[in-house]
Amino acid sequence: LKASVGIAVTQDPTTEPKELLHLADQDMYARKKNPRNA
Image (cartoon, rainbow, N blue to C red; front, side):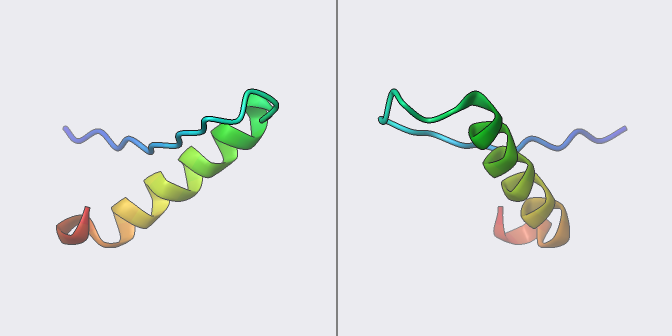
């Protein structure tokens, strides 16, 4: 069993939650593609 997590951080309070989710998804898939570089 494996789990994958993506991370997105911002200090801009105007950033939309769906934008952060999109960035976290991109990070997750990048980590899944290159697990040793995560």
